[in-house]
Length: 98
Image 1: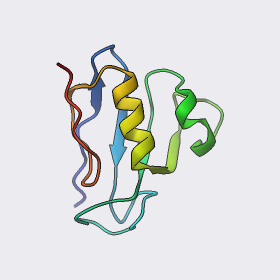
Image 2: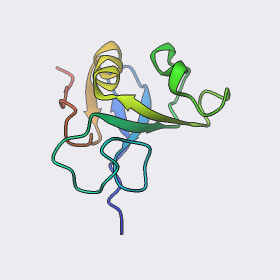
Image 3: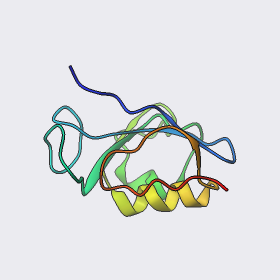
Image 4: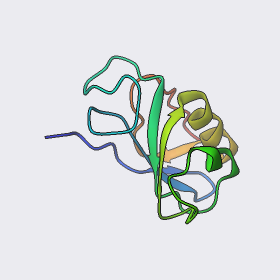
C-alpha cells in the first residue's frame, strides 16, 4: 500500500497535495526513494501560476500536475508563507511558517 503524504496547508490558506512514489508522476518513479527530483502536485486550492506548465488539464484546481521540479514546489510553499501542516516527499525542504 502506498503512503500518502498529508495535504500541505500554507500560512495564507493555500492547499495542495504533493506526492511521490512508483504510482505518481515523479522522478525517480519508485517508492521510498531517499530523494525525489520531481513530484506530483494535485488539486491546489486556487490557481497557482508557477504550476501551469505542468498541468494535465486547464481546470487548475481539479487536476494533477506531473513531474514538477522540487524547487518549484519549494518556491510555491515559500510564496504562500510556509507550511502550517502537511508533509512533503524526500528531497523537498520542509519550510514551516514562522
